Length: 361
Image (cartoon, rainbow, N blue to C red; front, side, top):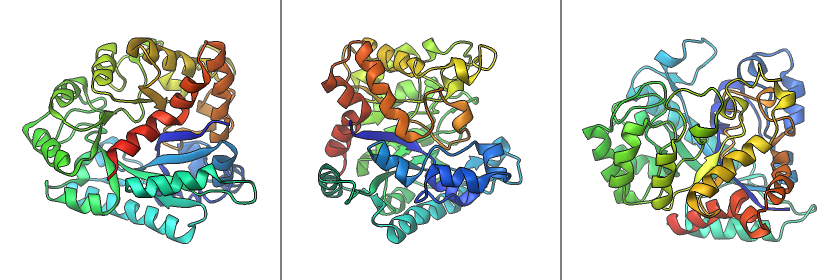
C-alpha cells in the first residue's frame, strides 16, 4: 500500500463548527450526526483516524480557516470574521485546537513543524503495524491571510506551528481571490517579503491569477497549490478558482506541486445533470493528474489535496470513494494509464514528503 500525504483538510474548522472528533471513525461520526445540522450544510464526513490508518494516510496539511462575514451570513457558521482582529482570534483558536488534539491523542495525531519531527514521524510510519499503528502527522496551513494583521504577526504564527500560508480565500488587503478578482497589492508584496524571512511555503490556491503571476516571480521560497485543479479540464467551468495551463507551467518552473481535488463540482460543473454521483468516477481525478503530468513532463509536480470536509462530503465525491481510505483506489487507475510504481508513489505522497523534507527547518 502506498503512503499518502493529503495537502488540504479543514480539520480544525470542523472541530470548531460542528464538534467533529477525528479520533473517531468517519462511520461513527456519520451515525452520530444523523438528523443534525452538520451533514446538511457540510456533507457527511470523509475523515476519521481508523480510515487514515486503513488508507495509509501518514500526513495531512491541516488548515486554519474562517470565512469573511460577507461570504457567509449563516448563523451556524461561527468561524467567520468581520475584520482582521476577529480573523486573528478565529485562527488562533483553531491553532489551539490542533495543539489540544495532539496533546490529548498523541497516539493518533502529531504536529509536524520541523525536519527533525518529520524524520521521526516517518520512521514511526515505516515501522508501524496493526498492533502498533502510527499517529497522523499534521502540518498547519493558513488558508487566507487576513489573520495576519501586520507583518510582525508572522512570528506569532511561526511559533504556533504554521508553515504554509495561502494569501487568499476571497479578496483581501493582500490580493484578489476566488470570485473577487484583483492584483497583488503593495501590502501583499510586503507580506511575501516577510514570509520569505521565515521560510514559509506559499500556497497560491484561491489567489486570483492577477495576483498569482507576480507572486510566482517575486517569492523566493517554495510555492504550491495545496488544493486546485486544472481549469482546462473542468466541464462547464467559469471563474478564477482553478489553475490555467499557463499558471501550471509557471508553477512547475518554480518546482511547485499541485494538490488535485476529488470534489465533483471541481471535476465537472454539470455532474448532477450528467448522471450524478453514480456517473462521476475517480477516472476524472486521474485525468487531472495526467494533465498536470503532461504539462510538466514528469510526475514530480502533482499530489492529492482532497479538501475533505471543506464544505462538501460523501455525496459530492466520485462514486468509488466512501472515505479517505479509498484514495488507494487511484492506484489501479494510474497503472492503467501507464504510470510506473515510482510515479504513483510520488503522486500519492512522495512529492509532498520531499518538499517538506527540503522546506521544514
